[in-house]
Length: 376
Image 1: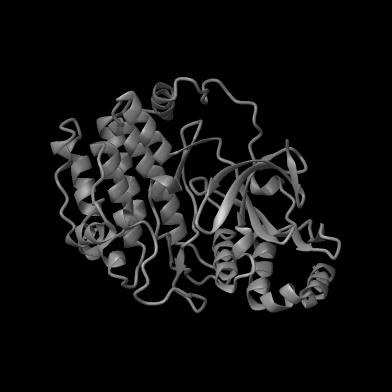
Image 2: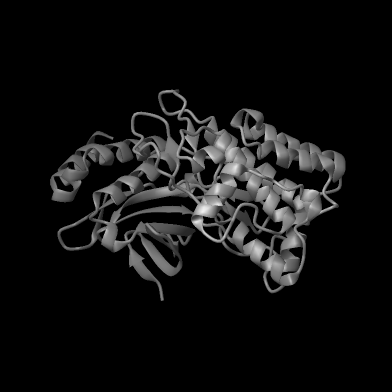
């Protein structure tokens, strides 16, 4: 049974993280969405609200086919939330588990499609400028299988910029603080050093090595040993596990996994272009249909793009952007809607919330939000 939440209807819980819960839901027009909301016991804690609003501030500015899209955000029933594009598909983690269960190796050409999509999404984020045309210097910091989604029509997308790091005046990550999954970190990230986009390139290289080798690269029996392995950065030849991998792919892996950031690809786009070259020269007949065939083999009970699902696809343009705030009666009230430029309006409100969280929490902010609505 669906449960109302703001202007949405929650269908079911699909995941629980350390900071938030994720739900499958529907908007008022029956579009499928993913709702991410902070755990109730964390909603009153300043640092968690700050992390949430920081995430919103970043993600609302990203609009690319290889990045999971943010659609809406607000405050409903005492919980901060945002709605995202619903990915009717699987995470790379789920794909890895399924292929091992079915004893099917990850095809090299599918791995090239995957890393091409991931790196194109990352490059877009790395090169992103803010509304003042200044570089955002965005680094994902957590490129890993759980954060790579595959749609049923064979497109891979980067998800969860929840610990993304922007090197500007609003950065709150302290030097020496390590965030992310240890076994997918770059050597410099494992040491708590300042990062740039090349750290994400290293993480993408770890993902690529693991899907082809069908084994974990740096994961050890405990966190200390894992971090030590990352810092030593000893990478065995992929051909030890997969003799069928072309030499060009081995070069890709070695370059992306260079211990020194300066020896890696200069940009994620360069890595994407290398994958595209491998596809063109080594697998000229490979198409996204081969991705779907692979998915059908490891998920035999499910339907993919060749058997179109009836679910409606969502896009930012067909969603009504609304900011909700708690009303005295315990319900929700729309105080900002119908924005013609969703990204700009959402960014403005995110910055407003970052600056005026105390006003919002005490009720003084409600009048300010009505003023925003009036002037917009």
